[in-house]
Each structure stands twice: as structure tokens, then as C-alpha cells.
Amino acid sequence: MIKALFFDIDGTLVSFATHRIPASTVDALTLAKAKDVKIFIATGRAYQLITNLGDIKELIDGYITTNGAYNFMQDGFEQLFPIAHADVELALGFLRSYGYSCMVVGRDDLAFFNRNREIEQKFEKMLDLHFTWSDKPVGEIARQGVFQLTPIVNEEEERRMMSHLHDSISSRWCPYFADITARGVDKGNGMKAICEHIGLGLGKTMAFGDGGNDLSMLRTAGIGVAMGNANESLKPHADYVTASVDDDGVARALAHFGVV
Image 1 (tube, rainbow, N blue to C red):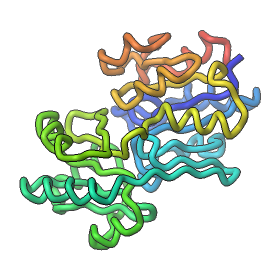
Image 2 (image 1 turned 90 degrees about the vertical axis):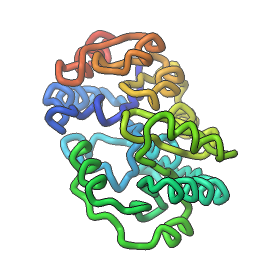
Image 3 (image 1 turned 90 degrees about the horizontal axis):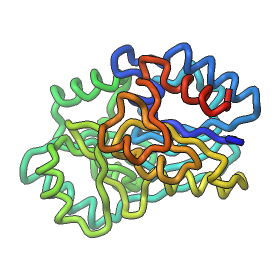
């Protein structure tokens, strides 16, 4: 019996078309919660940028954020995996040399390196963000610990940059940018830690995703579900492919497996 659900946000819980959680998903998660199923978020977003879950916020038991670099639960459980300082310096040096912009996620603040308001606005529009970026210098944010770097680069540029870093990995769920985190950090490992903390076997979990950064999570879960709108490279690794986020995919999958 499934006792915990893990959800990516963008393209899974939240539609890229409407920037809202479909009503069918809200209803299904409400039913699941009433049956004592725990609900977790597993996202590439920093917690400060999770601005679109108001319809289900009261249902959420915990969060895997920045692709597993900063994880916590309402009961006080917390995990933090900052990027090695040397890799942060190498990455920022590379970005400075080529003039690329990058979001820098600290423990408490976020800012853009090589700030470019046009890029910020595109980023905000794509993710429907309502957020005021920090004016703190990136060096000050780095002293908080950097949990994720999100450079606005294509795949070739990403490969070139990553060849300079020794203790970090990158993942990508959007063609416009990559997410860099500490080596060993991913959503799947975040799932394992949370399940160990609450004393739940992974076989009783179900995870939903649509992007490349969801692969570890779908492989880790007892049942891994790819959305109908998921990257084609992700679908072969899923136990089940449901309908798209805009076609009640979450609700359909939960009904299919008898969770609701």
C-alpha cells in the first residue's frame, strides 16, 4: 500500500500553460491525505522560489528542494548539502569569463551573478515567479553556503563548464538552463533520507516527474510515474506513464494504483 507521494512541481503538479495546479490534482491529494498518505515536494526550485503551491500547502509534509541539496520536514528534520567552495569559485570564474548569467542559491538568499534584467524577466515569466531578487553581493551569499548554481547556458556550454568542476554534478529539466549541485545530491537520495527518517520502506512510495532531474526519484520510488508531457528520455525509466499535467495525469495515476 502506498503511504507517501513525492512530486516534482513544474510540469508535474503545476501546468506550464496555466501556472496552476489542476483542480483534479488538488482533489486527489486531499483524498490521499485523508487516507493518511504523506505528501512531499521534490523540486529543482529553491524553497524561496516555491510560490505556486498555495492550493495544497496545508497538505505538504516536507520538501526536497534544489534537487536534493536542501531537504526538510515540518517536524524539524533538515539536510543541507552545499557545493564545495572551490567548485563555486571555479564555476563563477568560468561564467565571468564568458559573460553568462547564473542564479546563485544561498541558505537564506538568492541572487543573479552577471545580473541581466532581460534574463531575469524571462526566468520569472517561464516559472511565473513573483519574487524580489536579493541585492546582496554574490560573495556574501556564497558565505551562507551555496546549495545550487543555475547558469543560463545551453548543453554544450554546460559540458564545458562542468569539465572544470571536481565535486559537483549538473542536471537539466529545461533547455535554457542547468542546475549544479554537490556530487551525490539528487532527488532520489533526498527521498531515501526522508523515508529513513519517518521509518517508511521505499516500496511504499510513489514518485511523479517530467524532467531529467526526476530520473533518480522515479528509480528510487516503489512506483515511478512519468507524466504524459515528460521528456521522452525519462519515460522508459518509469513504471507507469500517465496523462499530461493538463489532462488530469496525477489524479488518473493515483486512481489507477488505488491510492484514491
